[in-house]
Image 1: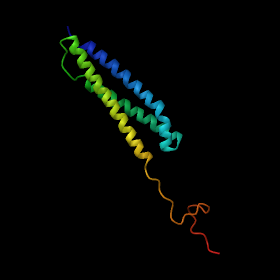
Image 2: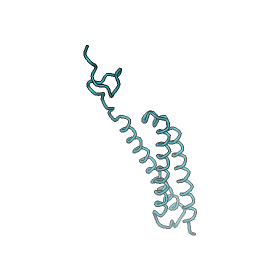
Image 3: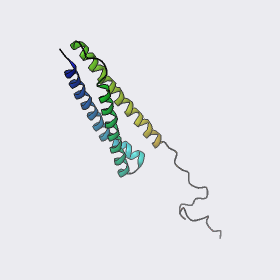
Image 4: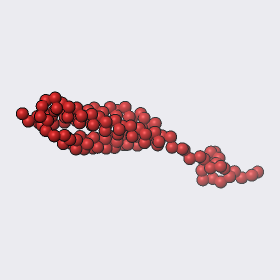
Length: 134
């Protein structure tokens, strides 16, 4: 009995479902964090959308490549083993991408803010020179 079709079907359904679930969760719950990083709602929403699109592209691509990992399983236990191994690889990729995104955003958030000029007077504005002496 050829077990490739049920193996592929189970793997694809699980990979797609997990990727969509994680992507939607990151999209919903990542917005407040991105707003605190970028300080602008519009920019945070744009970055959030771009991150989710990139997340889907990389994960679906990795899942498509991993579908060919392994040989044709001779028995049902071998099929389950191969399917679970490939799903585990997809989950590791999902976790790795999420962790890297958080590290990058943390670095952006902690970026040192430029110090004001030494002779800066907030009441005269940035273009005004030093206050005239009386």
